[in-house]
Length: 296
Image: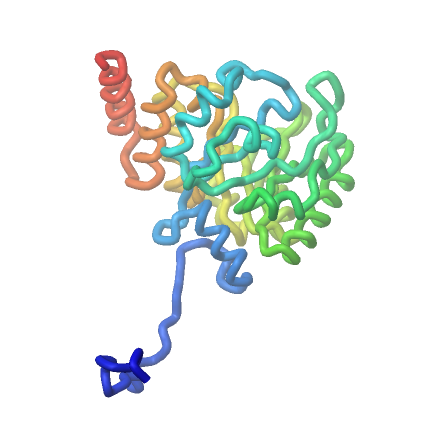
């Protein structure tokens, strides 16, 4: 046939070369389906197994948080620097550019506002909508030790089952109430339970003592929650401590979007997470980028 003219005559099947085995650095993901591994790689870097996730889902229970008054003006400008965005489906559809290259982690649990008991949550979206949005993962709060612990665990397992059908990973978030202590014993318990129930990712808080044991005891990636707003150097120190203890990165919100220079701060956090920059070096980068922004 004419379209065969000019083709190579000899085929090369490389018979002496074994089939390639494609590997990655995402903890606990090797036995997952291809689609789920692919979605995880949109969140976690395949080479380092780390991520800088930007959390802006605070409005689902506390309304227009300081720094999140206009998502289209604030978070949208930060999205190019994030490996993944963690928000609600409403925020994504109304205020985020669909052309974003960041992974999308959708908040999938909710219910009460800050005016009520926060642990009384239910699943707040169907997995089919996560598919429509092209989510990389969905996130659910798990209140281990809380008043509504069993319900939140059921929310988790319901989404995990639906996630296996759709090939979408689930991020279990350890929710710590006022009555619970954020120490390694509790965090180790909560993260392990979430992973054992099938979550492919776990988000939890940092603790000064024993965080390396929390991470080691969890068979899936542990992502550090940023928590309350800290001075920039302290936030960078916490992020550095977490990744050097084995965390798969950070999910920061207030420590980025409430910074005096959010764009500079997220780049400094990236230097800590992906380049292993020490906190002081990253803080110098933050100040330099902040100064450049003012000058421009």
